[in-house]
Image (cartoon, rainbow, N blue to C red):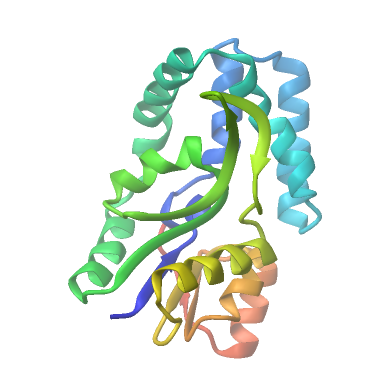
Length: 218
């Protein structure tokens, strides 16, 4: 039974949940439009360029969890999932997941986006195992900090190997699907790396290394 790992944003989803969550909070008036949109876009461009400071970004993206009551956050999240995320879940993405499910593979999503946003998305795909950046909590409240290692770039490898050790699994026969050159550290770890609607840098690497290139959303 092999491990089938999926990146989330722009891989399983035909869009970026982290970026869209920020835009959604702007639309709801939860955060200041001008300053939040400016910073959200700045971090998004840094991510695409491979220059993102993940700790700086998480301090920014997790601040609304600290500043708002949990019942309101959960209500906004349900609206966000219904209006922004559900339209991004394509039949082709579901079919890819189902192919691995029917093969008996262990399914996992691994994403830099925080678990508050991504855990219910993983449930929508019927995927039990999620490695995401974990928002820190204290006495049942979000602190605005990240707990442990963010699952970004090399952090995804660190978090995955910790999970493998805890669950007594290996990467033998493993798959990883991703759109981003930021995921090269993990793509290089698995037996079957697959570039999904890849960015320009990952396209060049995939072609040079004869990795499959999958057009899932095009």
